[in-house]
Image (cartoon, rainbow, N blue to C red; front, side, top):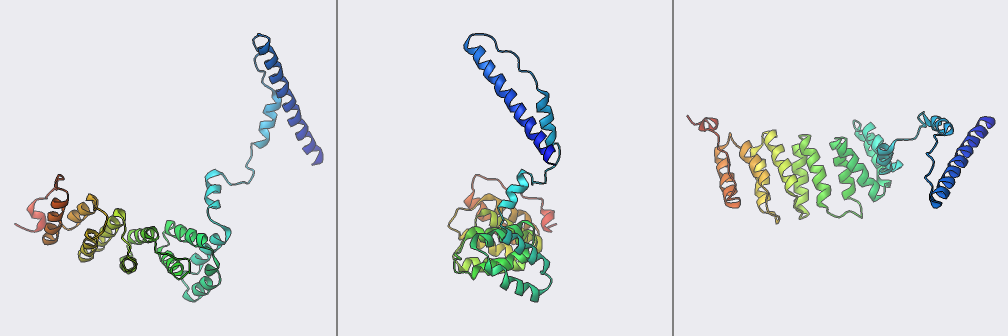
Length: 254
């Protein structure tokens, strides 16, 4: 092993000496006005490059960058939460012994990763743990990501509870959150809840967007009275926009 390592080091030194010599010679020729000689390809370089034609065990770029964003303790907590998610007693003990020890940024990283993996029930538990911490302050974006993840997973009962908690903290979501929640309630078969979110959107300090209106207008086709109300509001807020009205047969009128 020692002799092999020595031979590798010697080849690297030989290649470096050859490269420096050629660059020095080319510089002198340029200074004297002569054309530089073409660079001669060295067999030593080919030999050196062949040493790394194998996987050295280190993570590649994107994977390595992703792992660096999450600490070891946070990764351990994520694995533990997923392991004990079907056992409430063990899950409670794990949260008490490991989750509560995490720092603020590690807790946020755990919450974000659980949302990305669509472990929404665990993400909701993690969010409730964060709300009890001394450093917690109401944040719209924490609510937004969790509400959207729950809505896309069709956990609309949890969405309603989280929505009430957000409104008690005097927070208003953005247009994307309204859109996803309204779409979620319509797909869930709860047009009344979708209209409640719509009324809450009209009271938002931010100006509304067309997309939630258009999703409501499409989803409320079986409910013409509710649809006409949304249509009137849409025409008042967006007078230059057009609305497609389907044939009357869709509404049940013959």
